[in-house]
Length: 465
Image 1 (cartoon, rainbow, N blue to C red):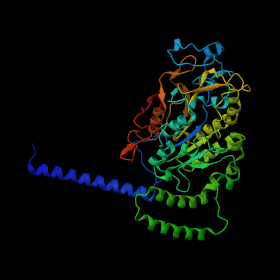
Image 2 (image 1 turned 90 degrees about the horizontal axis):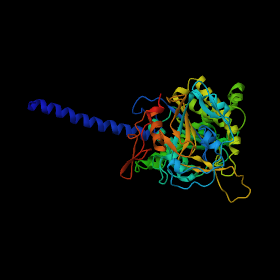
Image 3 (image 1 turned 45 degrees about the horizontal axis):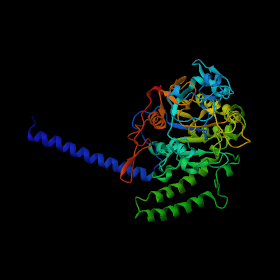
Image 4 (image 1 turned 120 degrees about the vertical axis):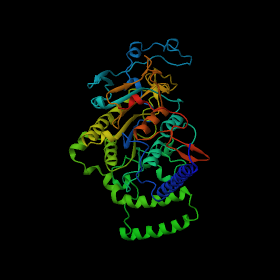
């Protein structure tokens, strides 16, 4: 039993704590308004501090890259035995064995296709998830689900959520950069949108087909006026904007515009240097190899080294891995990126960055083990159709379990059957590695709390070292 005096004392202390919590929340909101990209502390100690997402749009074939299926090869030309797999859906076409062989690589013995000999040399750093699955077989909704956590509704991208939660270590560069050579992929800027999050968290697009820094980053230099005069002009503009904003305190679009002006000015001081790979030693450039993929992955390393929080490197515009007509095209695509991906992993490791940098490789879905039947007479009879039921994603660094294979598809590679991992589960696990409880990283919009994983997702603890 408590005396009246003790009860009042304890109750009074509790009320004070409530007041303090409100003041701290208001201070945090004020900090976000004054500098929305300031570094922030996650829910718990993070394993990873930054992300490089190597995105392969179109859907790489799992049984031709990182998920060997010898029975599919042995029974090539036969129908897929639906009854044996417990399937009722129709899968047209006959089995198509992989034209490439697999070999066990590294001490872990992970089997990797001959398409990726250099990545195979990094097998002991890879955490290969062979049991991914998604919801739909179409590019547009599957891209949105993988990148934004929802296949239909407009939602913030994963990179936007990460920069919203963590901020960025370098205030002179965007916190989230999306690099795609040759133009936009399907769904264009929606892949790196901030949606209802403040616009400052949207990805900054870079077309890495250009080598000239001034073409790579538009308007990176002002040749008309000196830097000091430009600073004076910007200060006047910001003063007018802040005055206009005073009566519109909660206007996120206006705040994003003000922050964009400031970031654009600061980028003139540092961005040109960050994107200029000629500053790298010849030995490093040779390690990554020639071509646009090598150049953009070297840029990715330079960006995370300089504090950029989230970098997404697309293998090309459109959907280059969407090989309906000829799976042999995978060889060309793999040659463009294999050496550079391995160099990125090795380079990050040598610099002591891999432990804190999460590298992700994958597309929006996989491909069928059967040949696709096309009406196009010019198509070769060795393409594969979309497959949302089973595909492969791998990760490296950032606290994941290296030299590990998680889950499995059936013996033909059609659907995930062991240790199934949905896209929502992948997102929950990535956020966990970055120090977040995915159910608590939320944003209040339209009367409810939203999160990357919506109302789904579970952390796959087996993937974490």
